[in-house]
Image 1 (cartoon, rainbow, N blue to C red):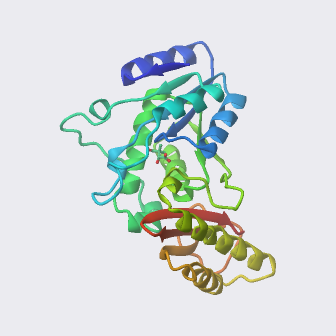
Image 2: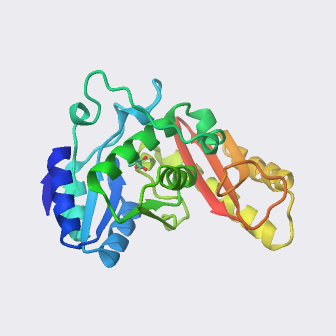
Amino acid sequence: MRIIKSPAKMHEICRSFSAKGKTIGFVPTMGYLHQGHVSLLEKARKENDIVILSIYVNPTQFGPKEDLKKYPRDIGNDKKLAKRSKTDIIFIPSDKDMYPQGYGTFVDVGSVTNNLCGISRPGHFKGVATIVTKLFNIVIPNIAYFGQKDVQQCAVIKKLVSELNMFVKIKVLPIKRENDGLAISSRNVYLSEKEREDSRILCSALYYAKKSVKHGQRSSDKIIAKAKKMILSKRSAKIDYVKIVSQDTMKDIDKVEKKAVMAIAVFIGKTRLIDNIVLG
Ligand code: PAF
């Protein structure tokens, strides 16, 4: 497993793989790898000749009051998990290389960012779309792998590659959960023991929503009202949003239909957790 830091070097290596007809599977991450990332790497390993993982905590997707500085990092463990998943190359660029002094080019994918996390985290998806564009330009992957947990990010990236004519296939893999249902996330380490226990309410609310759709409920308002009540039964919980949206457009929908997804963002104490479930 090689570690490459220079974007130019990384690109040169990727071009030579492509010239030899080798397919590149790419897993972009911000590090602090967990089983969710491992599932992406394993899938990439099965489907490609070469597997590239990027680790870069992208400053432009964090707001001024967000946790950029204290975002968890453990490069030693990341390398261990990457190696175990048979990753060929880890790309670890620096801030200086990604955003040199005077940097000014940003990618804005439009209306798909106008709801959910796009409201609570202004500028976040501009940062994501920008860094993903840059990484795709460097790595020129055939397939890139993302987790369904960041459902709006997946919609943003699909729109990005389609509208900017990038010939990268986007694969979205299911959410990995702890045994008690909590979606696995790098931010779960921030939770105290009690908060960790309370955080189970997120997936309970989502499972409730799924079950009620199964039993014939189609009214988004009714499902959302009950889910909110469940979440607020935990004193540490503060709702950012609980919404039912179309998986492609991220716009609110009144009646649950084929592409409906329930997406939630909840502060448990100071930790903001997101999760979602496909209802349609
Ligand atoms: O999902 C993430 O870890 C990040 O948003 C991504 C896609 C690596 C861009 O920084």
